[in-house]
Image (cartoon, rainbow, N blue to C red; front, side, top):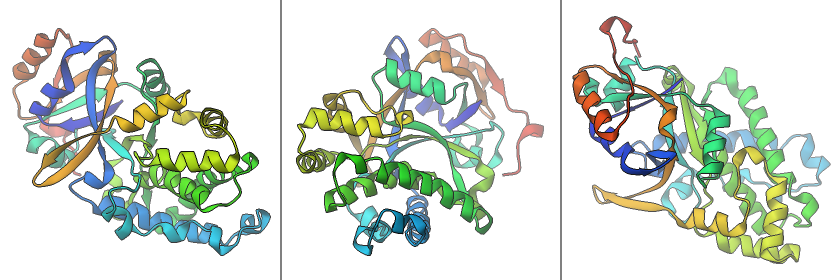
Length: 324
């Protein structure tokens, strides 16, 4: 089971009033640089840079005949990435593995007056939901809590990602052009950096994230340049590129599907800031119960009945509240 802490008002919006079948739940996946605490994303970028600098000194550099101008780590400057709205960034929905965290109730559950949504899903259900509902480019990943003891383990995971992203395209004749390096850099930025958190400060949160790896609206121009370099038409190049990437990412089957997904980014203003988000839908069957702490159970039950749902509402007992 996975749990999402939120306010009662947010629950009212998440449970859609007039939903399509299978799209009863709608989350706003927030772009990572729009989080209130931007230090999380900065930390992930900085650690990724350090790890990649190590990777780019190892044996595979010689194997693929790479030289320093081909290295990607030097582009991971968190100050530039966070200040430039045109640079691709991941969109994130946060979950955790317990409904009884004192810290999570305080920080995200309206100091106990909010709710916790309990979900029963896994990677397979997420992928099915994306395919059936026309949603793509998302994955369910546990956060990686960086400490010196976890350094090698996380570096090896990044190396796998680096190989997968950077060298899967090598047979396509792209070479190591600037636009190719830009494409790979954006892929790693969107697919890996949102998983890295400070292990000393956050490890007890045990967070799992739905990460939407959206390359950004400007990606369309980069894609056209890559297709030109490969001497292929756009659709053929897209299909070839898609076949080289990890299908767990559920990349849309057609180029137009990908472009529609990228273009459909929404935003709202909060305290003079523009907050970017993507809508992400789930079926009501994935919601197994609601947990409350201070709030009256009947308030939540009435909301569920208004929507026509018979979902249990549980009270978190004070003896079960964690120490986080």
